[in-house]
Length: 296
Ligand code: MF3
Ligand code: CO
Ligand code: CO
Image (tube, rainbow, N blue to C red; front, side, top):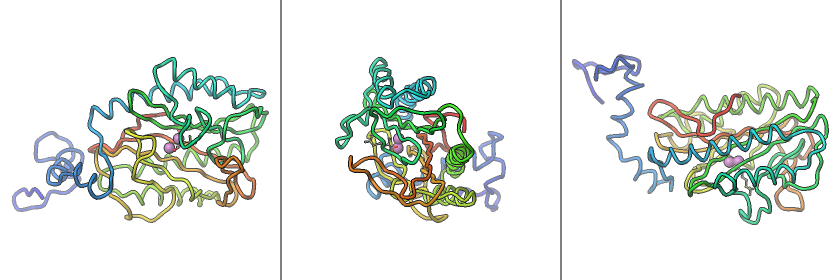
């Protein structure tokens, strides 16, 4: 630890390098990361591949296409459209922009996006289901552009929705926000799930345990796993260059689920509503940047 006149520098003190910024926002993390080779440590110890600035740029560019696809979904979603029509729109948009939709043929998944309606938690398969007024639908988009992956999803209202739909969509969005607030070097993976669980259960909703966020970028799913429940100060420490998703699935009723006969579609056991929002993030020297940013 750098010392000044024999006195330890506080996190909130002015940085001794003279930048005018706080120590914690300036040289504190640089020193810590300079002292330890996190790239090697995280690869060897956790199988986590930290990303360079150039890698992050590529993931960000892919993220722009993912966001473009989500915007297209928003403009297309209306009563009467089928989830397969949404799939075709998203697929064609990706291909037109030089990307490959990552879900297609991923462990046998048959379509290019996931479409999860009402009590479907995640991994719904696009098909001939027609959306109707009052439904909620999550569309999860992951593209591969030039070998780099970005992953994001949103839950949309179909026409005019009732109070239960409004409640679960709002709590899911704010759950992601609660998780994001934990993203900075020195915090731990467990802090993310802790913050989400505190918030969501405080709103009388429940957190799905069976599916988690994940590292992303070089592959669709990389270590570490990012649970949306948990304890403060547990799990792997966040360091600059980590790229991961947070994607809390929040249920209006109980957290339990079952998987349908198609071996993909996850559905709430009590058939109550479920909603989800997801973004891909990079941990930076002083916090985080969303590589698939949208308002929550
Ligand atoms: N996009 C999902 C996630 O957020 C994963 C979908 S896997 C698929 O991790 F095979 F269903 F596409
Ligand atoms: Co994901
Ligand atoms: Co996703």
